[in-house]
Image 1 (cartoon, helix red, strand yellow):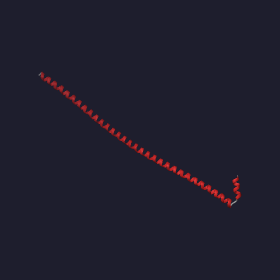
Image 2 (cartoon, helix red, strand yellow):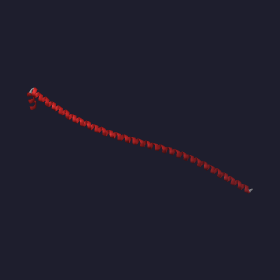
Image 3 (cartoon, rainbow, N blue to C red):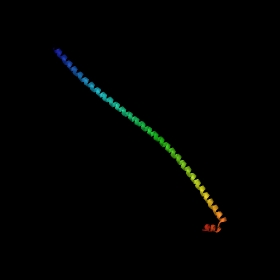
Image 4 (tube, rainbow, N blue to C red):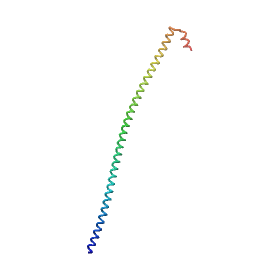
Length: 125
């Protein structure tokens, strides 16, 4: 009978161990699930960050292209402005020459046709 009691105790001890092992396994499974969820969340966050970085890189590239295009436009407009200013200066000189020629010819005409004393008075003043 004593053997039977030892056997029963042994069975009870084994049942307790089985119960403890089952609880440990359940705890480990819960922990594994939590860790898997965290891994998935971190993967999602990483993908989001990668997308944001790619978007920023694309934006930076587009802005760089815009900047280069605007710089070319500025250079082109600056050249055009210099050309127009040169034309303005050339036309101003031509116009001044024309006005001086007109005044000269008008004075000559006034001397020959108009009142010659008026010419001498204005030049002597």
